Image 1 (cartoon, rainbow, N blue to C red):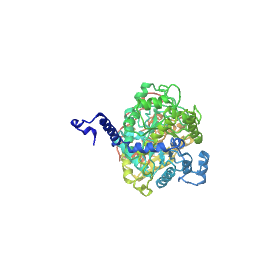
Image 2 (tube, rainbow, N blue to C red; image 1 turned 90 degrees about the vertical axis):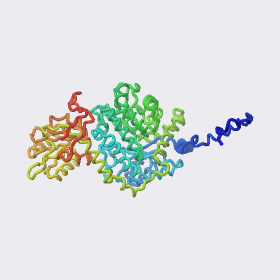
Image 3 (cartoon, rainbow, N blue to C red; image 1 turned 90 degrees about the horizontal axis):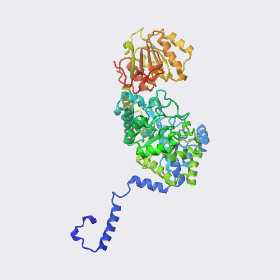
Image 4 (cartoon, rainbow, N blue to C red; image 1 turned 45 degrees about the horizontal axis):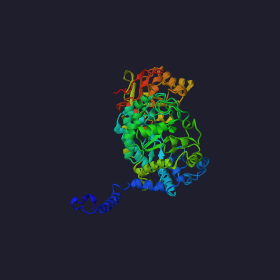
Length: 602
């Protein structure tokens, strides 16, 4: 009986009895459900308390391993793993270091097909559960959609962030993420490093570009929050990246350390909103950027290693207490200033929780252990990050059973419903930027007429466009010209163009200095007097490299769905409804050639 329920008229016992009653009350209070530790806290704290320092440090790392299976004996994969880690395969890597997670890439032979991926994931979980701590593994991937998709068909291919930005639908963005998450989860992948929350305000950005939703921070914030919710609904952790914002740089952090010269006020207005929106939407992870932002930290250190940014701004100002993971530490932006033994320690001191792909794994792992032994890092600091990592694993539900059923993969991956939904979403993103004299839509094909030359970038891209035109009765010739066609190729294609009724030319980053041949090709084609339809199949900005072509469309990616939408727009089966999510500036100018929000319809 609770003491608080006793009637005051009956409390006539001596004070000593009251003291005893108070003791009973306190004992009861501790045992009530409200005062008991939550199941999550109980598992996390019990597991953490049982772990050795070496096991805790292992949890701080995510890296890659070569092989189609966790116990691969393929000679090439074994040789690659031996060179990196001194082990044969992922199973031995986990045995040696008790790593907290494994990340998949095509070049590590991790993602050959959905069934193989599911079995690899199960093998990784078997190895993780066999460790003394019995903690399951995070399995991560960069399956952003569009131009960044580690798993190809039959997995459903998302249209990519900038395409979704062109569609302007938060509902579509959330649905796309939910479909992506459902398919990843079926393959045993529980962490997707998406969405990209960077606001791409620099058309020359070499590393973000169409991976961003928009140059508009409000649109980027809306889409980032929507995709965060989509991944969460599918039981997959998302990761907003790359904090504090990688959208305004002309340097690739894979090859150097970009410097973002935004003022603090500009950062608040441009870069912060999508990350704040992700946090407000409950994003379970944020990935740091290897960029220097002097207005946020004048030291010049990359944000990944910056305590003022990772702790002062992200943790304290934005109030974020989820997992923070670095971008890959083998990128030049991370190692430009400090050695491979210092970067992991400095990242942890800055406030990061998880260390992704250090270039010398054994050096990094032992550097963290040595830092604890020397007192530079305390074990309490390690516990703080491990606690967040364990909480993420518990919240994902993988602490009960992390395995997946390979037999169920076909019921989730690349299903007709998923493909149809993503096609419908993609159909709302294709953007008609220019349509001189209403060249588009094309008239219906007729025998002996409408001979189309399909040329430009992309062997598969040009052939796919041509095949879809043939299906609709057009005669086509395909001449793929590569990323930087030379003068002889350009002359030959222009000569052929004169023999055709129409030219469709695809471009991919024609504004790059090393790919100017694409722009020369389009401009030469324009001089043939044969009507020219140019298509930017990646960056919408390409159009500022051309003299005024007859028509220009932006698809933002070259997925099968994007090319299907493109051809249906060309022939009038689909009305283009996408709107530019970025401003296209004039060449060598800040003035707008086509403004944000521009888009034509039929």
